[in-house]
Length: 251
Image (tube, rainbow, N blue to C red; front, top):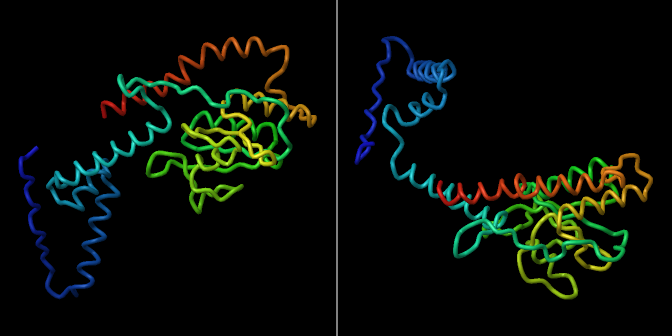
């Protein structure tokens, strides 16, 4: 790459005698767009349309790269926290790892679409036909990397701006990472559980109590399911996060 990117040559157009200027420019634009459409490499053709034969300014390339890296690392700090000393991925133990007691019937599910742990809670909710019984609020990564709500993705219960503010509604307050998925008891204003596998098991029991036809947690298969989960969880589910942290550290 050149130390100082060369400036593109000025574009000089020759208008045929007798051809109106407006019609000439229209034909010229159409010709350039047609070349882009016919090119086997549309990205290269579009780049030449914008910058001629010169490369984009080096400052623009660096700004885009640094912006993407910063956004990725910010997202990974929320989805895949790391050890501050080694930088290795460490999964923080859930503060509410299991359903304790019998929750009320006013339940609410909090999820985030970039989180695969929340995906399976949403998938099970749909498969078991619990959409009407279990409303959901979708959080998105905020500017600080924390799960946040927006006008397009609001908190359906309290209108909070951050998911951690919902956690803090509980009587004992809350400190720590506000993670998804999170099952919330709206009547008792308490976290039911924020461990995805336990939320899924609870939803299966909820559907069975309602007489649902699909059983994703049959008693005769539970030992096999738990055994396979013990294999898949550390090597596949958590493995994705370990790779993500490695990629974030070495973009």
